[in-house]
Amino acid sequence: MKTEVNLRKIIHEILMESLENGAYLTETVNAVLDKFDYLDKKEKSFIKIICLGTVEKLIYLDYVLDSFSKIPVRKMKADIRNILRSSLYQALFMESVPDSAICNEAVKLTKSTKCRSLSGFVNGLLRNILRNRDKIKLPDEKNEANKYYSVKYSMPQWIIEQFRKDFGKEKLEIMLSSINEKKKNMIRIDTGKIKPNKLVGILSKKGINLTKGPYLDECYYIDNVADIQSLEEFKKGFFYIQDVSSMISVLSAGIKKEDTVFDVCAAPGGKSIFAALLTGEKGQVKAFDNSFFKEDKVNYNIEKSGYKNISFEIKDATIYDKNLEKKADVLICDAPCSGLGVLRRKPDIRYRITKEDEENLALLQRNILKNVQNYVKPGGVLLYSTCTMNHIENDENVKWFKENFPFEPESLDSFIPKELQCDTTKEGYLQLITGIHQSDGFFIARFRRKEND
Image 1 (cartoon, helix red, strand yellow):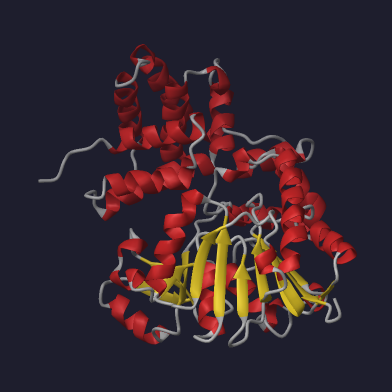
Image 2 (tube, rainbow, N blue to C red; image 1 turned 60 degrees about the vertical axis):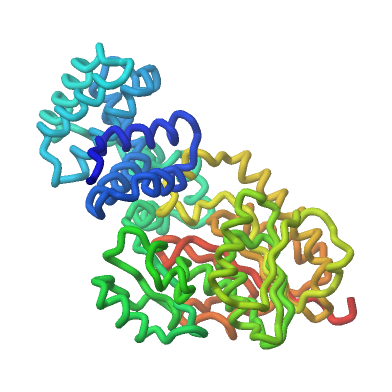
């Protein structure tokens, strides 16, 4: 017999964990959905949409609440502000939920907390906003441009200023608009195990849609499935959840049969597994990561892949290991980064990261590169990548690396799809931009170690 649960209470608890206690939103949502695995597809979708949507639209929602409330959001009780946020999100962005139901459920939820005496405040404020929703006005675009974009797209102003500086005004609104669009789930089909058209047919019989993705033959969108990882075909390693940008980065390394490949920041293992396919049975992939927390996930993915030419070891990429000196034909360094390229999938990143964090990450990335370049053979390839969009972690690190180590940039054009080739790819690097390209934001740079070093 199915246990009755209050979906809005679950949503509220997730938002409290993420917005008040600092838990990572996506991981928290997934953990809760695993806990309530007996919920049906529609109920799981309801929870996920409201949680991700509320956080994605957070700055806008708080702006609206502050416009109507005498008490600023920041001074409200934590329970109250988060009940108001999720309720307002439903009212403004989910047409399927009636206003009356939203207000009634918000009152019930408030009464279930320690703030039950404030249920009247919640009810009154929500009903006032909904009666006057046509009077909601954004900041003046002409006189307060950054604030206007910040509220409209719920993006911190410092990120807007940085995007404008790094990519120009013309691309800015395209990027911001795309970041808040619904992200389709993208997968890489393991063509070493199954042909794409066969997997399309198998999943179609289960009511699951696979449609061709951009740029690469093995890239597909997957739709109409609540829990991808529960699929038998996923567990057999027929496909992996992976954005096309990540696939392109691995192909940019130019891995050949029998190569020895090091993946030095490997978790959760997607790039390592793709590399294992490319290098063949006689090659080898050594995957490293310093996160004990992610060790089980990496080992699970490797075991699921079935590839015997791949191994995993906990190792800090900033600490020198003499045993690895000049052993890699190809070294993949997908460095820890600010993650501004994956905001569509992880909306809470925008509120976590700061300018200072970017500077510290850029320094960490340099420390990693300074160490792991020792592991590349003369004539070998080092592939540097991040899932972010800024100059400090990408272009500036490439410039620094060229100036300080015996490596030469090498054109990406032989390895990437023709439609992505441009002036910078001839120089050895590519910045994929959310909204401009059909992918996450991602940076890729290819270097070759000098033969005589």
